[in-house]
Length: 153
Image (cartoon, rainbow, N blue to C red; front, side, top):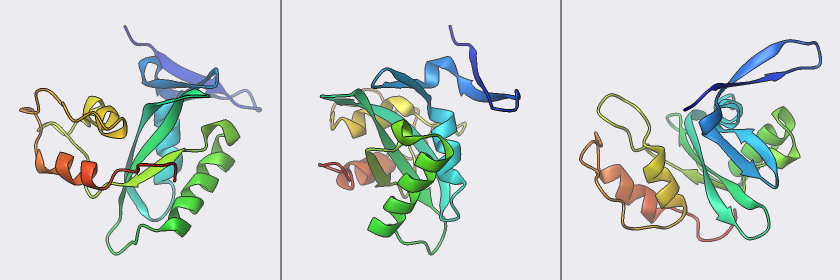
């Protein structure tokens, strides 16, 4: 089962943040992947973003973000710092991504749905991905593996 998630702001307005099953538990705080993705895509350089969890020895889970940049944008340390700051300012320090990876493309089904299972496995460096027959472009998985972060960025 999944249920819509929401939050209430200081003015009493309710904001739909996505589905509860798309939540990540970081140090006991439930974070919405949709809210973090929204904060990332509000940056002018980011065309698309996907957030998954990765195990963390202290926090339990940490945030591993994949970002697809708009044309002519360069992925570098400055951009990573800007994206982390943007998420921290929009959501709070607990939501600061541990990893941000450049993703020239995201693994999607033919109907356009992002395959988060595959992204989680890439973030965790799990090479046995199982059935990828529903992927629109299986080559994107190899590219993402080749560009993954080995250490926190």
